[in-house]
Amino acid sequence: MINNVRERNPMPEQAREVRCTNFNEVALGYTEADAIREAMRCLNCRKKPCVAGCPIHQQIPEFIARVAEGDFEGAYDIITVRSTMPSICGRVCPQEQQCEKNCAHAVKGEAVGIGRLERFVADWYAARHPVSAPQVEKKGKKVAVIGSGPAGIACAGDLAAMGYDVTIFEKLTYAGGILTYGIPQFVLPNSVVDREIETLKARGVEIVTGTPIDKDKSVDDLFAAGYEAIFVGNGADVPQPPRGLDTSLTGVWSANDYLTQVNLHNDTLPANIKDAKRVLVVGGGNVAVDAVRCARRLGAETIMVYRRTIAEAPARRDEIAHTYEEDIEIRELTNPVSCYSKDGVLTGVKCEKMVLGEPDESGRRRPVPVKGSEFETEVDAVIMALGTQANQMSYAGTPGLEKTRKGCVAADDHGCTSCPGIFAGGDAATGAATVILAMGAGKHAAKSIDAYIKQKG
Image (cartoon, rainbow, N blue to C red; front, side, top):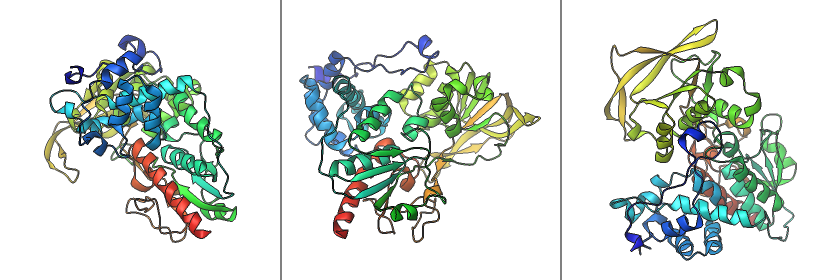
């Protein structure tokens, strides 16, 4: 029986020696035959543990059953009842930590490739259907959405489907938020994000780029302009300050700024990115992996250092495997402590070795420095992927708006805040998290906004 096969069908990929020379997507996607074979591995468990592991409780066995039957359109219809962005989530969600982690096959083999099947279905549909949206009766009510990342896209799309006139305000000149500026094209092609943006526009959503909401154009100004509710979904893109590393040196980059340059300005890169010969990336998450793989494609010798072991790194397993395959050196249990420079230009980094001690508040063993283990590494660029903080620019001066200890907007599970008419979700409310959690928060907030405006009358 095919559903007893323990190994998942491999994902077709660009050859290693080819993909390191370009920014094209590494994973090429399942064929129809691949998808059907993989879908037939699903055991259709009675208790559906995969659904319990999904933040939006996607009806996974049901859509996979349709794939197994070759009914890809039916599978798409099931997926899109709950998911706004299946082509994106299928590529970047950490399925191995969510739905696939609970798959019965994962006990003695490999989980069903749920994310791979979601991506296949979404790509199959997109290749056969132009962007379109059903016509809905307009309510004559305006809602503003701050930020065009996954939370903002999800919230705006659902509100538009309800008949609201929605305007998204995006501070950058490109829409898509972190999906566009923070994730390289070899992981998430711009064409996939562009389709989501075009779908929003087809639903009547207006997207105003290059327009930050800040002290010059505030939340109160939006209310004064006639918006009945506001959703704050501007993410968490302020880099965590590093300890000991001089961020003023030429050649020292935050991962956010580095990836924004590479993703949006690849043809006009600064010389200290384009010409860097030896690059060190600090961190063990997806952002660190994305940055170091970008540097590799730009022709640099690349090193990634992480203060714990790679087994404990939060990056997706597939992406870590790709990193090793692309001849990128990963130094575990290594932490940078200071920079070397000449005339304000980075020339090297001093690192120290670490050992794992007792568990910290996260439950992972705390990295402890080894005395006398310092060593120097010559580099001409260092990229710090040490996490991000909430960007308070859009709401810092809003009277009565409560914030969390970390500076995020304090919002409940429905996106409601301490201020009537202001809602929040995604990284702006939780700190840096996953695309699907942000999408789910946007959808919850859309329901709350609808209920709030209806109550106002």
